[in-house]
Amino acid sequence: MKEEKLGFIGLGNMGRPMAKNLEKSGSLLSVYNRTIEKAEEFKENSVVCHTVSEVIRNSDIIFTMLTNDDAVKAVYEEILTQNISEKLFVDMSTISPELTKEISAAIIIKEAGFIDAPVAGSTKPAAEGTLIIMAGGAEKDIRRAEPYLRKMGKSIKHLGENGKGIAAKLSVNYFISTIYQGLAETILLSDKLGIGRAEMLDIINESASGSGATKVKTPLLTADHYEPAFALDLMLKDILLAKNAGAHFPLSNVLIETYQSAHDAGFGNEDVIGIINYLRQSSDH
Image 1 (spheres, rainbow, N blue to C red):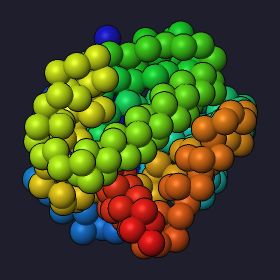
Image 2 (cartoon, one colour):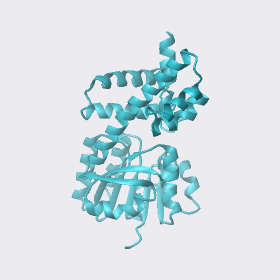
Image 3 (cartoon, rainbow, N blue to C red):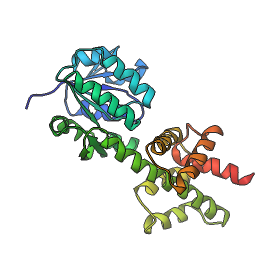
Image 4 (cartoon, rainbow, N blue to C red):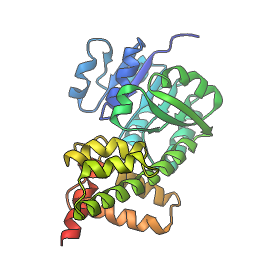
């Protein structure tokens, strides 16, 4: 199998460590980020590009990891102006199913391949290369991308055609948003009842109520400090995407109201479990 030249667009909290794992694997890598300073640490071993089109020219397989629909749309509009025949695009962003399908159709018309491959896991699994990758796309495209996806994730789930990866991601993040709100409310209750956080979190994590989601947020809750691994605003975006995709359930409106109110109160840039600060503030009033 020929060694593919790789491109990576979007070096944010998640994209940077994911691109680093591709770089460490010895692949020939070209990177681009709108804020060029974020690409500095790639200068020694990779090609730092100054435009999206430069990445496309340099690469056979191009990974994109961007913040939202607007950012993805802007990048792919530029990509679609290029000669992209036989290239493969792997979008790892969390965006709307509608935009995913729109972009995949436009890419395929230009005789290139497209996979939607969002991930489960935040910055630590991204750095460790232990993300779970949920992929939608043609079997041949998944096979072509798989050796490189395996540098970033411990598990690749091929779920069907384009759009199925995003569908799984929105579903799992909907569930995680309920876990984090429930966990924050539980800790606030135990605080009020005089139980130490470390003790309460030990009980949660050692019992059936514990999960990877509760364990990864335990250090933040114990320290009562919420440096973002996955920002609250990003979870709000995903809950709204899930609602638009069909999440019309009893919890949906509660989740949207809570996360939206937390955003409005200025907590959007904190880690998602920083929802506890908003809930504490609102319960004190």
